[in-house]
Image (cartoon, rainbow, N blue to C red; front, side):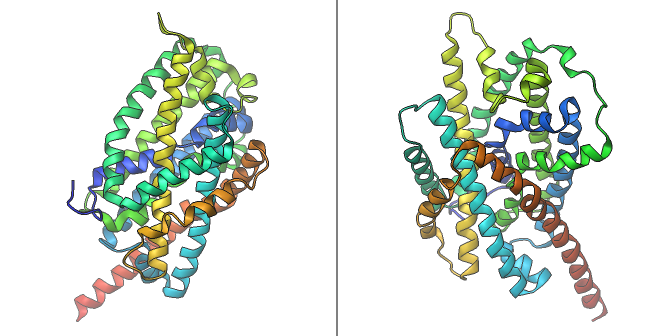
Length: 370
């Protein structure tokens, strides 16, 4: 724990990483992957997971290359300032769209399962206000919140998935190896949306007190997320089977309807699941919202950036309401996952690492000659 709100430990960053990734993408992950490749969708998940695991390690290495440097400073050192500002501007739009999609799906789910009579506009605006409040407090309170909430969220969630696994039918995992390698590769972008937002860790790298173990720590955190996703996919496929799973909108939530505790009503389980999920989405939206305020502050060269958190709320609110339905929201998300996410989450970190390594190497070489 730190006395100011501008420093976090590596452990806190890893907890932020894990909770940021596991948001609304986890709801549709099993059905989206199964719709692409059926039972062989597990290979899409594993390949996508392997890619983001490598990138997470690279992000940690970038933090070691540029300790204490902001995202803008890193981009400027690698690509010049004008290019850095263009990338930051595009990244802001990218992060705004991600948050808008997430909060829209959140509103749809909460309205369907919890607040049936509450207008979705009220649900969305309320969540945005709460996340803006946490974002205004800075990175250190966010790190403490992530550290506190992670075990409280993950332990009961894993227990519930294990209970749901009691209804798994092994025959639902067959036949396997039906998809071609090309089809599997084409399906990888679908899996990437479930890992979206891990690239925001580069923005928070400047707040780290120490970066020596960043590659290892971020790799472990990403590995845990991949393991959780594989568990969710396997249980959903094993319980519902391929034909039924393809037609479920939110199969992860549907899983918990089959769980029964002796002496408890099924509704109690669903309520527990929704409470857990609300906290997950909250911790998925808040870091991205904070990331936007940090980037705006860097773009305008301002030391104080907290006041941007609230003005962003109406912009996010209006963007979230652009899709006319949840189906249209997911169509936009599908397009987004095929084009924007591969660039910002995969290509850009690789370019930063390669260019940064070369320039740092040249700098050391010049220093040695001098």
